[in-house]
Image (tube, rainbow, N blue to C red; front, side, top):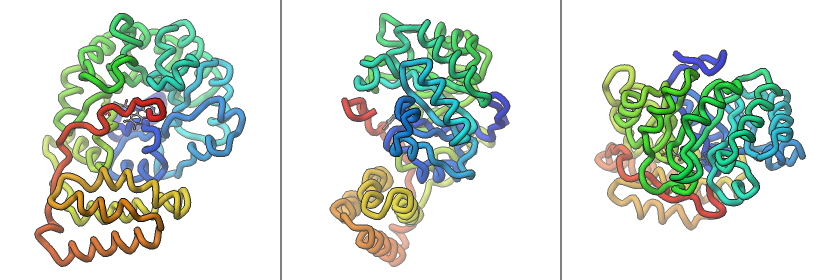
Length: 350
Ligand SMILES: Cc1cc2nc3c(=O)[nH]c(=O)nc-3n(C[C@H](O)[C@H](O)[C@H](O)COP(=O)(O)O)c2cc1C
């Protein structure tokens, strides 16, 4: 058990905020597998204070997801503070997280996301304003800095701690790096020395062993997993068991994987409606259904389907086929390949 502010957290493995991925259904699935904290994707502070319906919908969650953090982005201390207060009063999450790591030009060119790492006094002002505005813990997520000539993580971390931030997540890549190269874990070690608040290490965790190695090498208090959780909520169970007992649970069987796809389809269609949910689930299906013999044929069968009833029936059919083929149904595999997507930082993507 460890804490962020007064919030008790049962696991040291945290689900990363991921735009277009970590909606309510996926957060529930990761929570069920043992994620210690889950976060919403980044939500616009401006959209919140304007009470934009779509923005407000992005913050909906259920009690089973607690402890949950709502992540906000913006550039104005006043707007961020006002939106945090609004969230505390109406959405009532456990944590507010400040996004100081987004590398997407749409956000950084206005001074938000990781652009704030070029203006530490403004970062400080934002953090202080938000901490003052709410009574729940405020956390922040940063990158190393803007580029190789401007690595600020340890200094920014110390300033954020002084501003009253309750815990910090560091993804040690620069903004300019997007997702290229490797996350520089030595910066997590350096940042650990600069602060005493909980430090959450993030970047390139591909397995339970990596999670432990990051904690051992850097001294961080917890780890945050992003891309390895795509199509793989079981990673949290694996990390927890490995950290607690030194063992790794059996990999999930193909039939259970497909059954989870089915359940996830129902959850998404319930959350966003039949047509949108059916279309949206396809990217999750493409992450769930890879790495086993015949995976691409399964994906192709599902990828062209536009209608919920048809998708529902087709997944049921696959489950029936697997039930008739014990060897394939019991085929189990663990995600171990390279992280996907490798470079999601295009203009429109995070
Ligand atoms: C599709 C996608 C969306 C993301 N959206 C967010 C976001 O909304 N807020 C945020 O702070 N980070 C976001 N990130 C960054 C992740 O939280 C994480 O820092 C990054 O993926 C590195 O961790 P990993 O190597 O475990 O994937 C996103 C990453 C991906 C791949």
